[in-house]
Length: 357
Image (tube, rainbow, N blue to C red):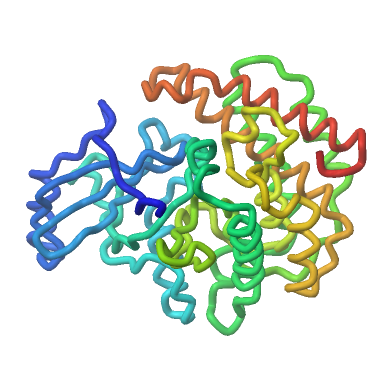
């Protein structure tokens, strides 16, 4: 039996001031507090996620990392809270219920929000070799299919009828994304990596016509879903909506595939996802199943896959830049420059071979 995802001790330098938090909750939402204990969920490289326990229930608090003010969009707690609230109103219930948002930085030093805790199993990539002893190939096959089917379900939400169209600007989305992520890379660059500029140029020269816009999660992978401990093929909740917007759904699929490691991939790439364990769909099989479920043409998926690798490289570069500047001391970040090189090289090889490699 797999264990339910559990928090660990809060990392040094990332503690919460529970005294100030409880003073605030007593006025803003006394039903939540007072918070009796705080721990931290260990996964993720971006926004920080805490486990709160009170006499009433268990909750999750989300906040941006130190030094994140220079990076727009992905660390906007208010936007993430509003997206969860809007999704809740659409009838899509595979989300944690949002409870409270605070934009007063005088409370904890940054904006934050609190949501319910959805208890279940999260398959962390770093546990892959341990989980391989428990997860059968048959289980992984059905689970990878469920993950794919749920992505198609997310993309089927009517963004016009629900008003979710308002959270983004779908016209010219792909072009803006390519240009924007290249600029983010240049702003965070610490070392000369020629292939990154080469990829940016290729992406700008080959922008596809695109497909009708949908809601897109933009960070959809195994460790961002909560699974039912009694039935691992049932997804209870999708987490980390910080980069959600509306745009070409193949951008979402490409990002998922860029995380999707296979058995022949390098160890660093396997560190993003346990999709390399036996039984999982291959990248191409995942894309083909998505096409069958959604009715969309995925013949041009290579472009979106390469963009996904490029974007992930930029995210790693941004985090590494914060580490190098001393804005975070998390030891996981020290070797991320190697990751930038690994993912950008993988994108280059895929272009050379004209297939997802």
